[in-house]
Length: 238
Image (spheres, rainbow, N blue to C red):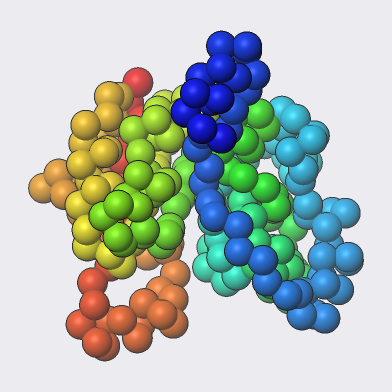
């Protein structure tokens, strides 16, 4: 859509999608992933069409809720949910093979405290998550869009952070992690410039990897090669 057509559509009151949390990459489902989707989606799947969630109804209890945006193949998310059965976990991922893989892992672990979306996180946050509903939001290793001309496509931007903030309860935590130093610097700049957040790092920079974030195989390999990983935690204070 050209700029002039976009302006005309906006003037006409049409909703135009200008921010997305992902770029769609189609992948082929394995038989195991497809079978897990068929078996577990009825009990673990959530849809954007359901609208605003009643978390007590969804999980059958009241508990602190953790939302992960872009869980990849789901290994870390499942590990975190298994390690913290007292918490509710919601994962959002747009790539179906990742959703299928996550459900396979969740079945193996026998989880009952995990639900998943196959949808855009921006729309899920806007339409499905009530204000103050979340204890933690985590975004681990989002697409770094390392070419400078693509930096505007990065998920962690002021507008996204401001849209996300009211979904956290006061004192709730946004936990970010990346293995791209330039993106880490960008994240720190965005979060430090955003109102109503407090950096939980003592030096107002990065924190050591928290014990609750599992160390991935990719990360272990990177550590051996001398590659860094940067974690940030910011608490909502307003």
